Length: 592
Image (cartoon, rainbow, N blue to C red; front, top):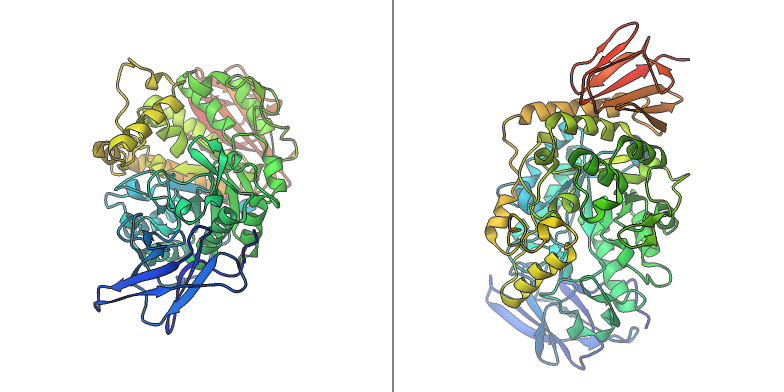
């Protein structure tokens, strides 16, 4: 089955009306039923089968302009257009003819080699209003902090009044409660005007359980013999779902104006078809002007394999897991695979990943491939993100799981490394707001989602039956409201000032702002990491124990060094460095 890559599905307005195109293998008669509440006009139009492409039905309606509601009739049965670009009344329609987006600003290309700093946010909980418009008002503040890339959690339309967004069903329509398509493009324009790029998290490995109309149009969208953790797996080796994915990516990047995409759970995009779906997504990204960035989440710990498919950067979790165990001593769930000591952390710093082919205790199978030669800036590290906070039973952040000096110390290490850092909304003010899992599914579906989540994370103690505190109900509105980020809290200004200073050092220092080699080791309770490039040498010291006095560490003398930044006051003179406990410091070493 060959589908025309150049013919766009859905409703596309032009000066004198709107073109419609619908692809279906099930219906013998396809109509568009439309209604314009502004004028009271309404009507129906039978679409005609394309002479050049099987199963494609198309037509033009002169009376239909942007803002007009429409639905697709398949042999008389009303369905929501899978290619809808506006669903103001929700995923069950009707759809709305949307203007073709027009950006008022130039894109900002994401160049990982220039020390980009990512910031992940959920539109619904980033502000009290939970809208694109409200979020746009905070962008200048992020730019001033030192953030360069804003990453939006999924916005493709999903069912209900709230949710994380990973159960979207309309891959080209923004979730209506966040705002209109015009408000989304205005958000992107504000970001670009503030010197920020915008990256969108997209989910192509499954569709949500409510509002998925694809089976009404064709049985070829999903693989009837294969399931993934979320239900029927998409048939990426068939042209139907592949075309939908590629149209979605092309739309968000070329029309709406995003600067890149983050592919959720890329390990579930298998089999990826021929050519692999990631290769085709990469081709779309690279064809943009300027080229867009393609990042991916993937649990196989094999970034080189993804780079071969055209992915530009990969989320890498070993650093997070090691740090988390180091700070909290938690060992349940996948944390059981990590020791969380300084020696393990030094290995992760040097090797970039911990698992490079060793047996992973959770599965009993080998995990990962050697990371030697992997450019460090192409790995995205995080101390906190939506998964690592939100997949906890009670959504606690590190700010409530460890002491503030400990968190500041590992944060300075985090920005020192040559990997690309990703911050999670509110992290910069050390907010204590939880980020819980929430959705809005009624009745049996809601119970099924809630129980399914408990099964998925049953290896964590918080989800065990009889746990000390019951996990908040994902379907309760209060669970969502508690996840709203509180920015104006005690200590917020000091925390923001610290993050600003750390990011300024990363941005301005000639060694830390570019590619660099890093070696690491441990002496006593002190972790040391040496970053060096043609521009010089920078030595980071992280003291987990009692105050120490150092004249030499890791074979490097502190005499003659310059103290660039420390998390608590440290004293450096011509002979030695006095480093307090739970402190991290960065020194500029003299030339050899």
